[in-house]
Image (cartoon, rainbow, N blue to C red):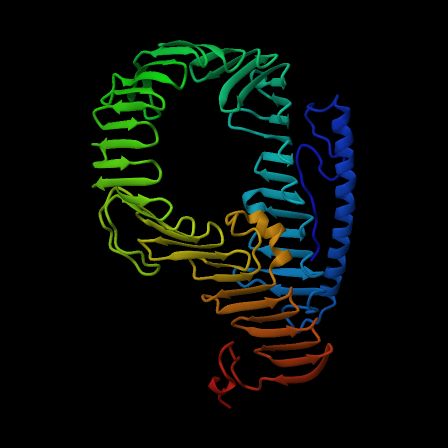
Length: 559
């Protein structure tokens, strides 16, 4: 099938490769880098498109008698997908494939590059040697990055017709927007102004760290020789510090209006330290129902006192005592985290690190079961459990917050992992097992399953679809997929050196570059040896034989 690569953004990726914004108009180094990237990408695309054209030509010359194929093993194979509607073409072993699944189309030369688009959700992705260089677009928003150091992003927002950012981290930051009040430029450490970056609403600096000013909501902090001296002010707030010698801050009680229009209290505080962290004294949540007093002389002692919780530490971390009246438990740490004991309704823990630990909180639910609908327990609080034996040899975690029930068992961190997640209302479940670097197995809510032998990165990044798209083909020596609802299955060894596929309508087998092929459907059976048909038979008045059903079970048609 023809495949057209067309990434439409405000700058052309595979043509001029130049942003429309004026972020690098005067940067000679940036223009040189972009020209080099442009030349490299064009060469790669030329090679890839040549492969696609050759493969598509082979498909068009294929006999119309078969729904898939041709089957030439590692060299070339085309087949329908097992777990979703669509088809996939693979060529040159693991180094080239295309896939059409539902509304999504993917084209890849692993691990060098890949391109994927889904018009239904207006998304496009392009990767070059992921994660070296990536491009992503979702709707009007786009972003490309190189080593997460050089990046360009932007698009429309709810309040702006256009916003474009250019970053050479951590040296240069720039933003240009249709709202000129949102424009900024920063050249670190000399001079700059940023908005909504680095966890702050605004940042202004001159010869950082000599002087900088930051704002987060109404709190403004002026830093001189950061982090040693600062002045801070805001709504009912005022403070200063000469770190680590002395600092103090006071905030009065204020009132805030939340998104529902309700007025809430924002507690005040009084904080002070001397020779941090040797001595500190704090009064927090002043004016609320749970005012707190925290004081300490590190590492000799510190304490917290409040209506809901008391805690005392002596010679940290040797001994800590906690009385949590809100969650209804008491805890002893002696020393933390080696020996921890907690008892009460809200928490039950027994730990002797690294030998063993058993901890849980919340109302105890029924034992975990991967199948079946469960009767609601009526509990409003989540149940959490965390156990280990000879850490990190064995680790178990469970979280239940209806309708979610999830458990995970691990051996030696990522060596082996078994994650099982269930919807208690519907009884549907999914499961994932990883045994690094041997295999990964997945079973989804629809009952579909997939086994892959060879898993180098998947156990560490189980939710990263780009690893599966760009890297997994290189080491997936065996792939087995099953779709019970569609009565379909497929198995592939060594990138289709052996491939077997079944469905309701047909079943086929290909071995050793297609030197032996077997295909059976409702029309009949075909056997090929060295690509030459040596046996053909037609079904005469006999119902189609479904996979897994012998010919003797088929009912003969009436004469």
